[in-house]
Image (cartoon, rainbow, N blue to C red):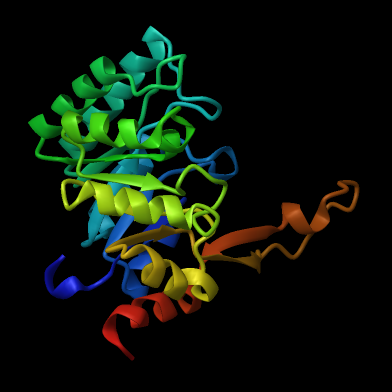
Amino acid sequence: MQNNKLILEVCADSVENALIAQSAGAQRIEFCVSLPEGGTTPSYAQIKTAREHLNIKLYVLVRPRGGDFLYTDLEFEIIKSDIRFCGETGCDGVVIGMLNPDGTIDRKRNRELVEIAHQYGMGVTFHRAFDRSNDLFQAMEDIIDLGCERILTSGGYETAVEGMEIIRQLIEKAAGRIIIMPGSGVAPENAAELIRRTGLKELHGTFRSRKIGGMLYRNTKFSHQEKDYELQVTDPEKIKPILELSTGK
């Protein structure tokens, strides 16, 4: 993070949205699908296509399903296979997170995932499974020990604004040993306060707006007309004001 310039990571749920984010000035993409479920792993074709078209850093969310972060042995094998594919495809990193039933970090299995990622030269972000852990500060120490480079967090709250004070404390206690990257509910309206009150160096968000799709014909027998025909697209006008905060424009 040279010159203390803000690093903005955009969570994109399609190759098209990732490309919009790149054009708007984002430095890194977290690539996923199924955002209403909190994000899951994109298809191999989507990952490959994203890597072919993006020239900024690409981190892929490796999460086989929505719901909790307690995985079966079969799901664990799928996660490992997805990480290997990301490495073989030339991704810059992966985004992972596994918990034990008691809410502690699953050190054994997360360590195995980190080691696989490192074999391919990929970085590792620990995602918001962290926010579901039973002790955020102990969880941070465990994740540092695992060799992850950053934690995506809302400070244990629904949004980063609500968890601002905890985020500040995490950044302070991390003392440069790991990047604490706030995310969830981040918008141009609150980014400046988040930066000022936490001392963050990296920020994460979806920065999307609703857009009506191009369909001319609509089947009126379905009740959710607007929802069925609208798209959620990355909005450059929500990205640029945040980037300007770090450039002083």
